[in-house]
Structures are given as structure tokens and as C-alpha cells.
Image 1 (spheres, rainbow, N blue to C red):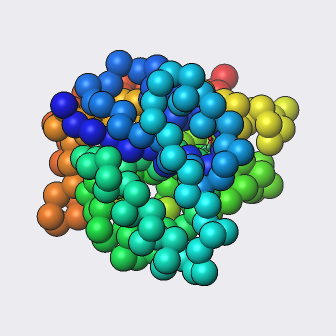
Image 2: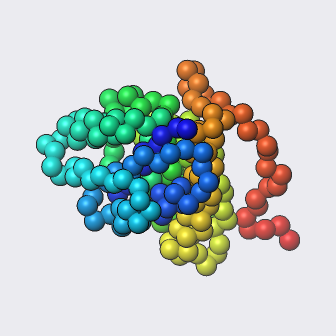
Length: 212
Ligand code: GRF
């Protein structure tokens, strides 16, 4: 069974979704760069080993990344899962875990990389939004896409209601993506393309606003 390590910085709802899903893997540890991350309590309550590595204890990103990699490697993970980990990881770190490092982002990448995605979607008047699970590459929020979920943006949405709708889908697609990775149904090919054995295609179109 494959080992995974989950990195968080805060609430940890995606981590919780992974802990509660029936994924064919062993969750070896949850690591946070913040001691006050709520997700740590959830992990501890479920008996998952936790560790804290505060980025403020390191002079720069390079030193933090090196210490983080050393800590991660003590758990010998096959897959490293970023679940709301709010630190940018340097190229050396990313290359070390290439093909084993995945992230979830609250937008339909490659649109709306970066922060404040829901507010920016509302500001732009986009009618469809969503979330993406992707392999991490040195190019921030641009790695090969494993799975996405789309949701409509409703006319009365606030940043909060839109975030909740997207988060609901995050909690569905992240366990699926990690399950595929752990069961060997998806991988990052040496050509940088996703290999996905699961080929069931979606059977509908999301049109927003709805046709009359
Ligand atoms: C999620 O929206 C995720 O897509 C983004 O950060 C947020 C983390 O939320 N990367 P949580 O800590 O998993 O609840």
C-alpha cells in the first residue's frame, strides 16, 4: 500500500475529506507550517501522526524547503499531497518530488491561478467556476491536470457562497485523484503528460445561465 504525506496550513477540510475517504493508501503523516492550523486537531483526533515545521524559523525559502523535504522523507511517502498548504515551494523542492507532488486549486486552471480566485471570478462576471487537482511543477498553478469539477456561478453568489460550492466539489475530486494515484490508475508520464487509465467520460454539458 502506498504511503502519503499531507501538507496543510489551515482549516484542513480537504485533508479531512482524504482521511474520511476510502483511499487505498496509508496516510503516514500530516505536516503543517503553522502550529495553529485547525487541520492538525482533526488529524490528531484520527490518530494520524502530525508534525509542525514553522517557515518563520528559517532564514529563507531554500532552507525551509530543505528542512521540509528532510521531514517529509522520514515518512517515506509515495505521494505528497498539498491540501491548502500556503507556502510557495521552490523549484528544487518541486523537482525532487516531480510526479509525486499534487495540489488542489480553487479554480478551473489554467484560469485564475494564484489567490482570491472566487472574488476574481465574481469580479469578472464569469458564469462557470470550479476546482482542479494537478501535479505540481515549478510553474505555479500550471502543472498537468488530473481532474477538474465545474460549478455554476449564480447571480446572487457572494464570495462565501461560491467558495462553499467549489469546496464541496474539492472534497469529491481530491479523494478521487489520490485514489487513482495510489492505485496506479494515473501517473505523470516522462513526457510531462498525464497517463489516466480511468477513461469514463462525463455525459452532460454545464451551461450557465441555464438555457430556457
Ligand atoms: C482550498 O480551497 C484549496 O483549494 C486551496 O486552499 C483551500 C484549503 O482549504 N488550495 P482547506 O484547508 O482544505 O479547508
